[in-house]
Image 1 (tube, one colour):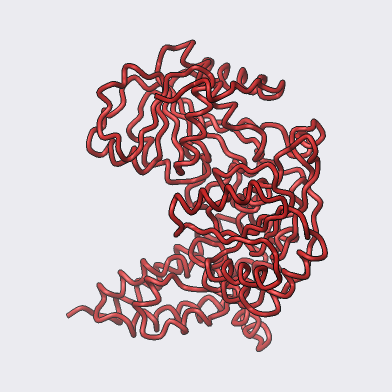
Image 2 (cartoon, rainbow, N blue to C red):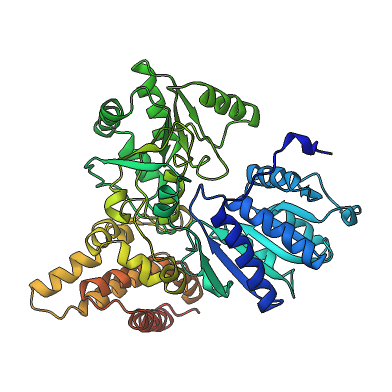
Length: 504
């Protein structure tokens, strides 16, 4: 049993108290099967808020609360907070196979994959749950758990109410969004540090977009490991951040290791951390980072969530991203307020500020929740989309199946469209040329019609990417038109496959 005296109860700030009451009131008013999403910037105290919601809910209903996270660090952090509030809770980790003692606990905290495994074996693994709280609710891995909990309330919490999978919007699972305090308001209230942002022009030609819509790790590693980008990083650090505790975010392990070698060669106190490190090594590095005033820690992904080191003074985005969620997660690692820290620095080496705006800028999260496609399209300029979508990288699983993957990867809808217009043809002919290209790829990689239709299914992301690109070229990017275009394209492609790849 954990000694509760080790943890101190955190008093709620006025805005936190207000939102706890608001959440409880909405759940009471709406009854069972009502799902609520709550947005609050990183550093605003989401864990403190939902832990207090759990306490109030247990008091009022006598039912249990289940809290879902996707990282063990978040499980432990949440359990500590629940202990501080005198809530009898249990962490369901890989060692917990049964819950014979569940009546002793009011709350359970679990990683989503572990709990999913238990529920697949026994759908009644946990009894009498009335409220399911989902931390980092933008992460779509949680959806698989919802089917096991009927007649309950679900409360999702996130800094960015945008689904990690654009085809599965959060509004499909949550009935309403409560928007918390803005970043600007939290800064003005003294709850968050303000960011001073330094941007540097960088050449991102060579970046490729993967199937998830973000730049691929392989192309990012290649761009950010080259000599010129390394020199720019060192120049930016020495111009702005020397002597300050600095956290550097990279896209891949190769580029992070290159950063480590660069800083080590220039006699800076630097360590590298990625997901391949053991728990012991990770703890050792984070302890060193905490205790070393001018430490530089270069990392990959692992510190974007579940990591809280308030003494960080500089965040360097040594990567580009098309994910607004990731952008806010990275910068948020520097926003913790201390008595002697009211400001921190952000160095952007990925044109991210140009893509998303400054971290402190107002964002209409209700618009993001209700109309995610329109919201994201508006924030990524047409010029950026046209520039970057021309450089596309197929998923490795698909690439390995094709005899000549370059035939797909080098196809540029923008170039084909411009060529059609320049030669006096109709722009729509670009779609026909694209369809011919897809058919040629299907034909040369399929033995019969059945193979061809299966390959067509695997090409759906590439088809959608091209057609979205086409709608931008003709400035007609409505969802309805794109869906019609995609349906027509697929029908014509499958008809041609059936007609010309006869299975005998």
